[in-house]
Image (cartoon, rainbow, N blue to C red):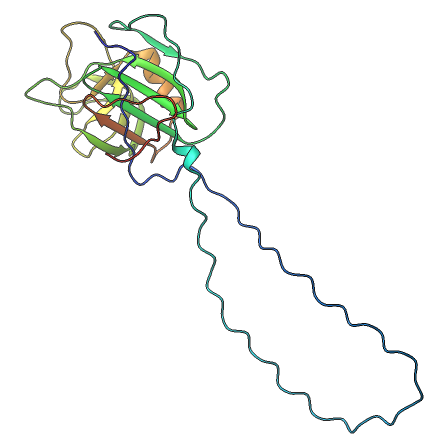
Length: 221
């Protein structure tokens, strides 16, 4: 039975926060006014020297990502162990920000993080032994709310494509004895929640038994 002690944790090549560099110039020196004096003959004017050409400046490097943006800041409080078909969603207090989805096959759970705050979690089903769910980091490349598999002629509601050969997250019956052909199946109502929360290019991270705790940075495994 999956517990909340297991959450998938990896991320690859994600910049989850940027910054703005502000250049401050030094104050120019102020020239004091000359003291009054008797008139003087002005010297013969000389041609002004050619203005020196300032050397080309290299563009400022992009600011380093904020390490805090990679950190898990909240995990949802779930009352007791999760069971087949359970799912929770709570965006209360979660700021806007990048969305990362983690999947732990060993714990049979999926979690959705926004700006480091877990906003959703559910029990999943996944691939059978002869058609295992692949591990790794996958960008979402397609979204289709009414997708039907062209291989199995089966509905895949709220489909989020992860691989070119059809592995995806989608709505499904979730219960004992259910397996997939490699996809990650979640309760249909939860599938709609994820579908609405993510955009193309957001990362889904699939691991097998990795743990993620509060304050722990999300790093590439």
